[in-house]
Length: 602
Image (cartoon, rainbow, N blue to C red; front, side, top):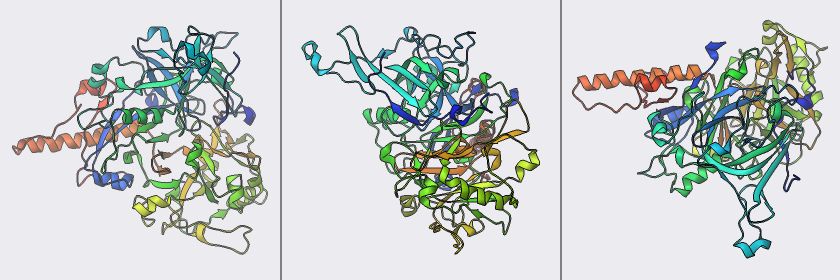
């Protein structure tokens, strides 16, 4: 357990460098993670996401599982498919996992105990595996130059050439790999691979992905992913639970970007009214007790491809600006920070609740100078790391929020009862709003969105100024508020129940890159909208079992409506995948329509 380990040994997936030419309990255990295709009406989309008014919307959502401070998804690779569990990482771009030549990878070298969930991917057993090859200019006598798409060319002769790739991360771990490609699909039944187009179609895989063209549906068996076939791993990549990593930032090689490029190559064009968009994906992180056997597969959230799903939401989705999309990361700019006493989410504040401002300039809140600077939202990093220059101002606000002049914020283990935890303050982060969303009407009105500063019943103190403050207060009603309650930033020990450590660290030197880790994402569906250059936040339950139950309820409602239609001698609406065999197979393909009298969560 890394609970009492120094912060340098915690998972930090922010990539420090990429090396070129290197030398050389069962109630919450998800066994079958159904990928749910869910149709939504335009009104639901308008309420939940603020997107275009579409007559019909489809998304595809699959289960995420809990690792040791990270979340992962099943990635089925090759023909026949082999499972590789991969960390979802918005702070890096490459998907990579150990292959057969990665000797003793994910294994204790002394005891031979296996750390990883799955064996190495055996490329020799896949009929669709390809290793990338290359030819530099100086070897033009053998043919035209051939470049690597992601890696760097290593060329000895025509028989011995390959594309190499490698990466190092902030925590000190690294990997080296050969660029390769194969047919893949994510999520699905946790313990059973589905082989071939017909098997995938039978189970509804890809049914919610949106048609590539008017006459061609999406087929996962058409999608070939370029990835790193790892030959060496070090540090936490060796002793982590997951087999590998799935890069989801906005740079070449990212999973979502390769999927989007695949759509474009086959003729996809997003038209007015299309809400499914391959440039969008959403993550929703839950947290289960760390005392569970995580290796068995403990469901703890979900991944949605093509948009966000408002069935999860407790609050409307609101949009923050991605201030530096050209850098490839999802970077949000902090405009203010407050502490609110007595825990709770955004809407839990009682009337006249006092907010205590962290009195610091925007430069110090973001950890570096410049109007375009900000903090990376990194789903692969466990904790949150902020500037050490904030520590004093945060400590002042912390004492006031606890009404205890002697209180001291720290990251040491501390014993807390559940009642004690409820009296810890909630951290409120104010992010720069997305102006284009406001101009296009996709940002909700502040009067109904508790996630915006301008909500009339909350956050009023955020806009007030005081002569006692050392820094200016520049927030406006369309800026976004994200709450980090104490049960998200305080982590309970796996082996010492009742002992907690705060996982928001103020230890980054000024000028270094600050990070919002998975405890910042926790309890929200976070939309990474690369097409619009924004990051959306909606407080959400992120409980996959609950999501499936609510989705099933919508399907049953549709079945009743269909029966009523048949009885009135009108043509029945088509129902897709509503049979018990499909339901029990681990997949669920659904068609939903929201009834006028159906109450929608949030």
